[in-house]
Length: 120
Image (cartoon, rainbow, N blue to C red; front, side):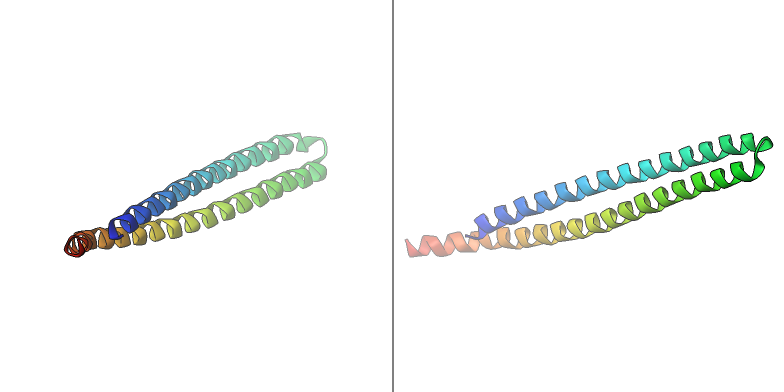
């Protein structure tokens, strides 16, 4: 039984590690999206400010709007990434606990086998 428990716990740990890796990848994608949004927002604002010669107030307002939109996306994507990284860390911690429990169960396996042999 102990050996079976060790295998089950190891499998559960592997599943947790895969989930953590997936969350980390998704977090990185979210951070990449934030970077792109910031770059696009800056570019749009800069382009709009170049037009400011014709309509300075209107161009400045549009540039501020583009910058604000980009900032909102950056904050949202960064927040999502932070939450995913925290959750990934929790899954990794849980996986580590499963590995420890699996090691303990595996260590008990010889004693279980000896007890079973005596019963036979």
